[in-house]
Length: 285
Image (cartoon, rainbow, N blue to C red; front, side, top):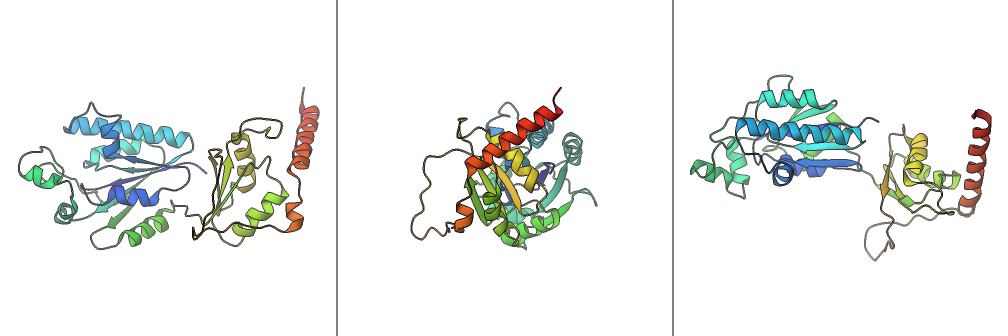
């Protein structure tokens, strides 16, 4: 599946960042305007030229992340049509979501008091007060959501449904998967084939005789099997020392049938290595 960018734009305090956080799933990065201003783009001001450069850099980061396989949820004011056209040119697969809310509603939500500071002349060039926000022309945005009249839950559901961008798993299976074998597949398939959304967490173990495959190699093997399955995603996770299951945490530890538990990962690895060796002898020069 090709990685893509969803670009949320709208007035300050219209709800972009809140929605972006609600859309983040496995292998997804949230690019936030405030964060980039405080890190990558500290040299830029708020003139139209600097704002455009800010967005050009953000679009470049989004494209680079997409090329590395990460989906991106971007939340930026992006007030000018010319800036949105620039992003469209810079990012190969981008969908624009206009987060619409009346300026008076945005001002009511403004806990930092930025709108009032702008009205008092303490902030210059503030979008919605003394700097324009150019409403998207018909067909420019892929979707418009109205946060003044719809709840966060309703809005997120609309974005997820119409753009199909959020993966909301109910099952997480963590393991070494060295390599994926029939016992593993029995556990995963028991959930995935019943319509449950599954994340396969691949422990990033150090290479050893017991763990001969890198996490990347295991992910490639798993993606070969489940890459086209609509209910399954895989992700590499740190090899933590301990996972504790306490009382009332709300999670269930899966037990497996005896015949599945008896399947040997060691035997499977030996068969896998043998098949790789035979393939090399058959196809090698």
